[in-house]
Amino acid sequence: MSAAEGVKSARRVLEILELFDQKKSPLSVQSVSDALGYPQSSASVILRTMTGMGYLYYDGSDRMYRLSPRVALLGMWLSDLFQDGRISALMQDVSERTRQTVMLGIESRLRVQYVHIVEGQGAIRLHLTPGLMRALSRCSIGLIFLADRTDSEIRRLMQKLLLEDPDAMPMGYDELFAKIRRVRERGYAISANLSADGVGSLSVKLPAIISGRPICIAVGCTDTMLFREEERFVSIVRDTISQHFDASAQ
Image (tube, rainbow, N blue to C red; front, side, top):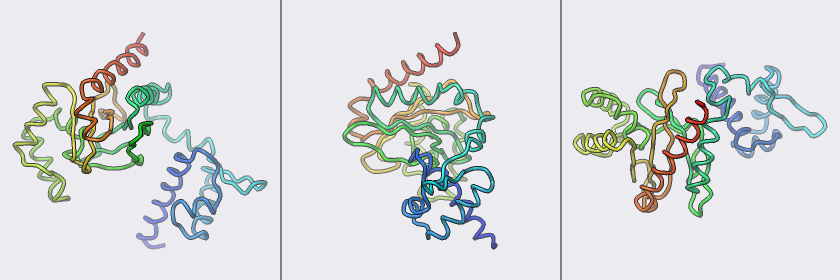
């Protein structure tokens, strides 16, 4: 197997695991093939390999593959926060109170990675996939992480980011630093039309870390709703964080 083929196979394994997470049900070879656009033969080979390694098990009676408990055990060492359900419950509560999509983000080098998403219930919903990456300068969670650094550190990070992606900073340094000053003053960040036209988000840092790194949640919605509901959303997010983390400390 060439290096390129190995990378392709590894990506497909992860995409299959994420598909199980999205569907929350057993999957057949055909359903995996249809959902992910793989040749049926390739899907079959990967599913059999994952079964042989103990990550799936196959039920011959209905020809369906199911996740094994080994998958659930993979990340148990990361944090007690997910084991006791605090963060998941917090995100669900914020989503129910705002009716909007809620994202959990962690810093990944020069970018933010969304590691968990609760889809909103409003008429207009943002459809995001866990694992999605955004440049630090193109989302409200990224502005939160940048605000923890000095201005000189921020400038160095942006220079590195722009070498990789010339479109990563859709504003000048003066505007970026003005946004970061507002984050430091208010304790939360908002962004509009940075990741996509007509889309905005509001982010607050959580009083917790995962793998030694800070984490944030963001409420995602249309830019129009963000500006109209900013104060209410900030109040909801802060109140919900206080409820879940204060209660867990008692």
